[in-house]
Length: 451
Ligand code: GDP
Image (cartoon, rainbow, N blue to C red; front, side, top):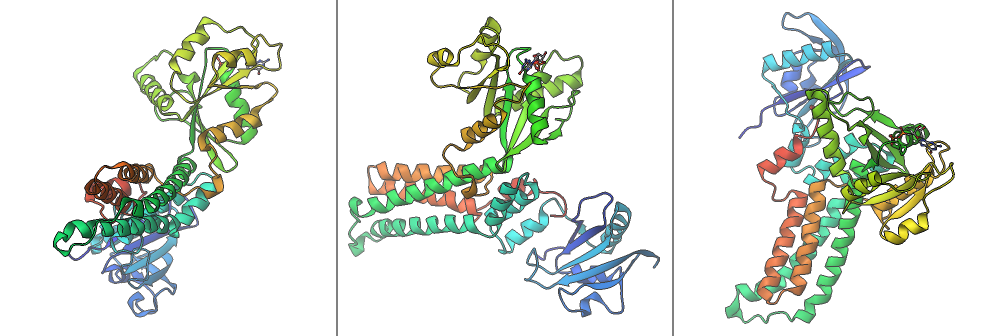
């Protein structure tokens, strides 16, 4: 099927210096020439050279003064013929140019369609395509650098390497099944066991780095919980003031602050304020509370705040019941006041919990708290080594590791081979070597228009 030619504005809408329109597909240059006027046609100018000119509407009236450039397949972002028109910013000129291009026969691109074409044309693999999204979404310098390394192919190369090593083991096993008449001796388990062990170890390391990377990408979701008056709001505010956080409201909520993102050592920490949970006064607020509650459930980590200057009470016990099974850091707040709670005695009863004394009033312990949050999310992982990965990719790697483990313990060689085969499939899905349309739709629909 001949691909059609798509167009979109690739810069963000709104007032800005320039707005860039991007065309991709076989008619890109001809379509651009339909409204671009310069001394010669864009089609006649050298690829990748900016041309100065104007764009015109249907009646031949000037829309804007622009720069235009063309790219020859396969040396373009999508691997196809492409053209770009750089208009002045603000939406009007770009909007009129798009309308004119649609009249001339272009189609409006779907979100992520340029990157999807780059993938379908084999210019980048799926892991690289997803790292483009990582770069767009990066909220900290570390997240950006890990996404850039993935786009460069670092993670894909590692996964490809694992897949090739798996293939070698499988080939040895399957040869003996497929050609029994050739009398190929089955490999002895002790021959391939060390290879499998090494493979599993390497896959585990990569899984850990990608899991760390997905934390870098999404941020650590932290919820602050505790009974009223222990100082949750004060703590949130103290953390925000200290860290110049970016504060956003979850849509549908009537409160100002619901989620705040701060970064520590380059890792985004997303604080969800549960002080917003109260009896709903209308439907809108009810929706907001439902969202806050689900953010609470999905939190990677909970900060359980207690008032250190008060004895442990029934209300605290109620909160503790709801925290069963969650990852928790306990904060004894109001450490600037005489203390009624004793950390050692508290931890004696709950050896699995960590207690930190803090004060929202004096900011005591807050730096240490941020350090503990990052450590709780990364464990011993090294932030600098984290690989950019999506939740989908982390899951594929987890499956790959699990299946190598199953192969190690499998009773028959048949089973070993089938586990390894499935493990390889997971790696292939990671790279998008066997991606179906639904998967591609899900991935690329997360992109913004024009990417
Ligand atoms: P929340 O209901 O848990 O959100 O608690 P608030 O943040 O509203 O705080 C309740 C009261 O405790 C307020 O009067 C705060 O000023 C006070 N408070 C909060 N943190 C501290 C602290 O670290 N030290 C002292 N001395 N008072 C605090």
